[in-house]
Amino acid sequence: MNRMDRMAAVVAVCFLAITTMAAVAQARPTKRLDGKTRMCRLIAQGKLGWESEPWGTGGKKFQEVCKSCHAKNSDRGAPFLHSESYTSKGWNSVFTRRRVQCARDGSWGVLSEEEIQFVADYLYRNGAWTYNPNSSDSC
Ligand code: HEC
Image 1: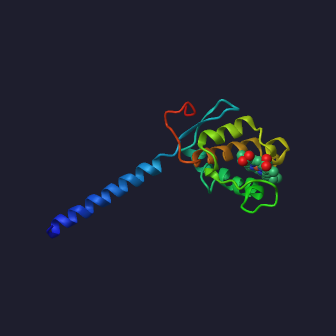
Image 2: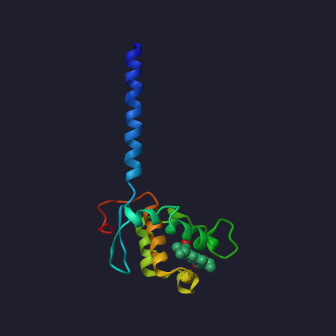
Image 3: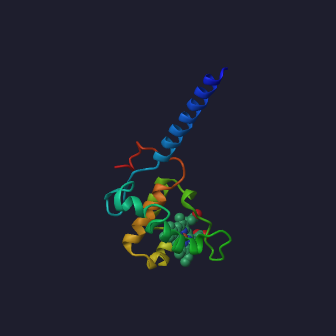
């Protein structure tokens, strides 16, 4: 290979890496059909886009409230949880049914309904890697 060929190969590899990274970054869900309100939430843009990131209300309240019990080595009798503990669909069902022990015993009560929705958006958007854009959960 001469010098120009090698440069062209490097450029091609970089291009491939960048387009792959862009595709992966975009592959998070953009909409969440909330099971309680039956509202279609656009979680990749505007206010909801911000609030469903780790630095938004959703991410922050998850850390502050949920992780106060669901941290590693927690002594609160709660298993370790992070956003990838469930798939997007799984999280939606947790927040629709609200049958988990802590939802029933009032531990979510420190959060307003709006904050709970933001936490649900955050977990849905950052859930385990099985998001299917064609699933019935998207709206
Ligand atoms: C006051 C402590 C506490 C807080 C706050 C709390 N949880 Fe829990 N959570 C628990 C306990 C205790 C259980 C029951 C564990 C069991 O059944 O063994 C539980 C169970 C769960 C489960 C079922 C886990 C499993 O594997 O069975 C999920 C999901 C869950 N919580 C999510 C959340 C979310 C989301 C939040 C924040 C909105 C939250 N929890 C806040 C204590 C808490």
